[in-house]
Length: 248
Ligand SMILES: [Zn+2]
Image (cartoon, rainbow, N blue to C red; front, side, top):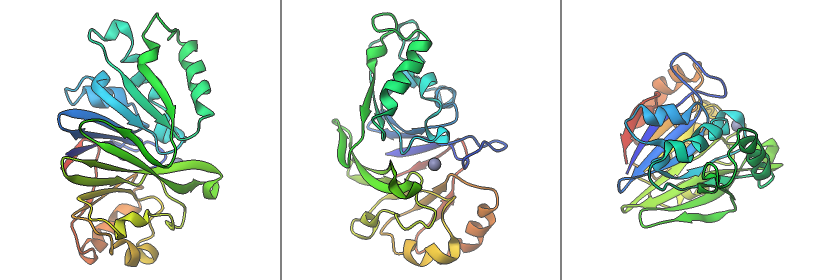
């Protein structure tokens, strides 16, 4: 299992950092966690065909996590796709499904014309949301969106005997950091940094049962704080850049 952090910025694009795009490789297959800053070109630049991504999991419906879905959809269209490709695309808010379909239709992704049906939009609910021969992906509710007024999710991935967590964005006080990290042994956690307060949250987070913690969703002001605190974590801590990859 390997995670490519292709977009590591916080809510806005920074120099050489675009918004959230995380590509997970398991058993030679690819799964995308959030689709913020131009996922299509980021994946293509790795030498990977974007339409080989089997499933896309959106943590919450903010633009920095979901805005490049139409670009990914284009890659499944018939004129770009010489072989049959299919993606399950999981959206936390069911209301977003007809809205995104309308946007795709506005760009002439009509059924039968561009294989629109192979970009299959599905709602997320807590628990196991996706399973194939490589992975089992489960959604854990978080409270990022106005204290839970709108749904948001962290995702765990089991595969190849490994366990991985992607937190998505969390509540402003980090109180919804998934408690499963204190119950199971993780091989890696990919955590957002924007809402992590080094002073307040580190005592809890350092109890996470993981072999490594990778911070993404970075604001420039937080990076030196994490660099200074790295030694206080009982496991290796990494600050992800766009284009980095980490073995899990
Ligand atoms: Zn957000």
